[in-house]
Image (cartoon, rainbow, N blue to C red; front, side, top):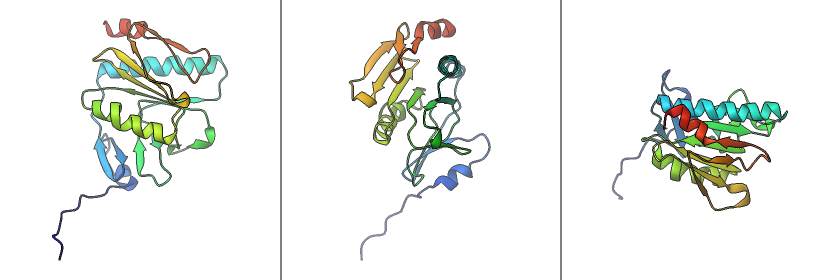
Length: 187
């Protein structure tokens, strides 16, 4: 008779919905990953990027929508991959319903915090690439860098500093001036 092993609990989307108010977590293949509340620097960057992208879409009469966290993204049809990216840009409105986005957003931005570093740099990069996200930005305030992954064109990642003007690859004319963020954060 084989030895009995303790089995880890396998969580589901129902466990996400059952979280107490104020608690947030992401679900990846049966495991919950709790999220710490963001700090002020994180929220300033999030607000800046959300406004820049949203204003660009509105001014150009675009059809894409930009959503800041918390916003549900169901990367898999079986709901085994539930994430809350800091910023999601979705261009296919058929992916949207009252619960969030079902399928890969076109563009995802994650703002790194000390507790999210491995998740943002490795786990989510792999998940987003596999799911079909076209563009992924990792904004790292501690290192003052932005990694841009143009996954649609299978290009090597490009590293920018917080003083650079960065082009969004999914748009022809959207450039975000990160020196404006530096001023906002007093860097």
